[in-house]
Amino acid sequence: MKIFNVVFCVLFVLFAALQWNDPDPYIWVPIYLYGAIFCALAVTGRYYKGWYLFGIVACLVYAVTLFFAKDGVLSWMTEHHAENIAGSMKAEKPWIEDTREFFGLFIIILVLLINYVNAGQKTAKKMRKKMMKIK
Image (cartoon, rainbow, N blue to C red; front, side, top):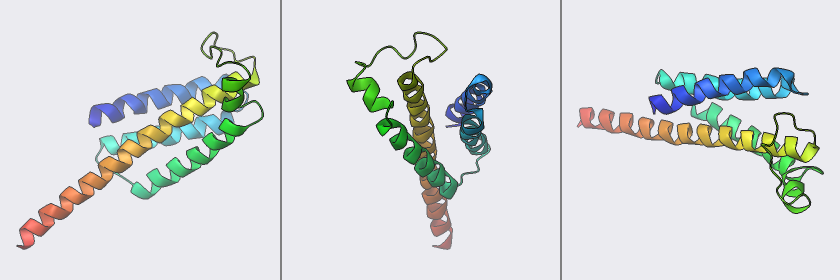
């Protein structure tokens, strides 16, 4: 899990840095740094299940909003026939921007969820060790 979290910490910092030229960096830089911070903490063995849940729920709400937005992911899939979203770095069409943002949120949700499950397993393992000492 350490390698997983180091890789995603670095990726999220890079993603945050790439947001400076985005139309809304004040939204995306904090979102990606949130993921980076909790990956960095997990590398050091510190897990915060409540904060993972908060991040998962917040990103999920935003992802659902982007999915059903006027020029969102659903529009990209149905009206625009899932056209290539990686053709150029500059997203000139709003459905491409929203779709890319949706997938960014999906990655963050997935990473936070994996860390949430791992934190639960670590907590259960610690509890078993304590119980063994008591017996």
